[in-house]
Image (cartoon, rainbow, N blue to C red; front, side):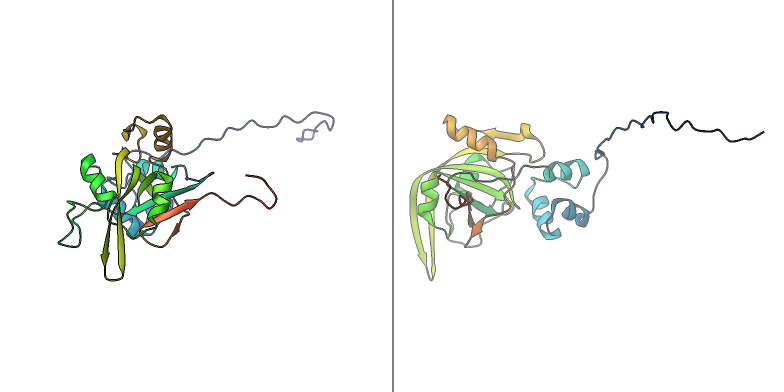
Length: 225
């Protein structure tokens, strides 16, 4: 007697059912700095700046992956100035009246404002035309200023630096948690823009100094704006 079973060629195949799950980073897992750099597409030194700023408190995998999932900013109209700064620290020059330059969650709103609104090599007319200045640490927006106009100008050797009349439109206390985003402006349109910018990532911007400019892509030839 044969031990093989003959298959019916007319029988309809029953395909298996499958389900996909996305691995979740465990809160107790920590990454090394090179691993975090790979996930965030940064250099290890830039990861160090994030850690020093306090906006990334540690290299818990859940925090790092939350930053990696941050939406990227694309400008659809106009031009967005972005101040690319670092961890908060004392100004390098003794005659600088600011308590800090850079940004950190522990700065008061006034300290953040004074650190961010002055004194920068930039194209001041572009900043005032935008009416807003995003502040980013290692590429993530940690604060937004509402710019009302130009302040002063300082000439030092070959450098010309500018300040702006501004107020704080919003700030971030934790990049990996939306509940750490504070919108402080009462202007509805600016509040919407600030809410969109806080915690988002800036990766492509033209820069000739500390303030970069993110522009809308050109319209295809022949297309009306």
